[in-house]
Image 1: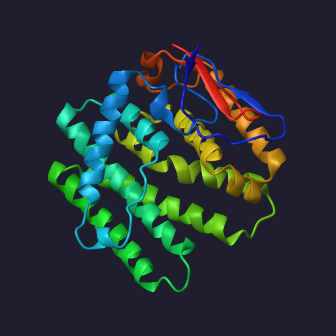
Image 2: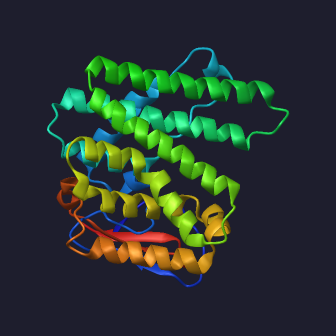
Image 3: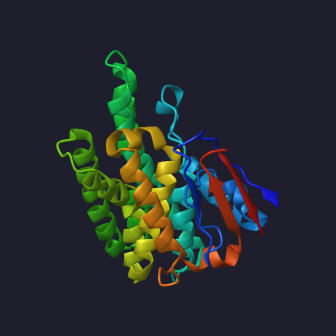
Length: 273
């Protein structure tokens, strides 16, 4: 048995999630995915994340506002999608940076909502930093001359913001509406990237995988919105679909050849590889 890195979440209604199957690294509630990867994959992802972070650097705003942390699960999902796309490695790097810069922009704008009212300068710089990341994304894809991907990602950004608004307003009493909004919000960038390269069949997997990663990362806030029972059912359903061989995953997941098991009770992860 090999140890894997994941943040402890404590007890959770005695719920244990196991997502074994043919996808290797599939796991119901993975957060710190880097620790569970083979060495060469981990190094490659770290290289790509370093590339994104270098594009996020700005002399002025960096002195006052920390850039958002790159979401490891979303980085892994995007990396796996681009790995199945017919792209030269150098271009795939640029696409990875562009899409993760969009995610960074969305995350920075989210942080404005969480800032205190007296943090005016920080709020303003967070907005400007998010706008800067967005401009970098447009610049990269315009240099790559991929108008089709820009169109797909524009659709994703619109729908992500619509789903965020739905979650923020909390006008419905139906938890399923919020579960679907969370699934869409978390997966749309990766899903639209997959669609750009004709990989529609990967979208159900991406939705399940990134929903489960979101539950692992932001469990308390998601439970507050949707409730214990609804989330338990949604997690169980997602894991069931991912175990089903008809749910196609990016080829990266089978190449990793890992199986993971996460137990909410112990907050730990073990696996074999």
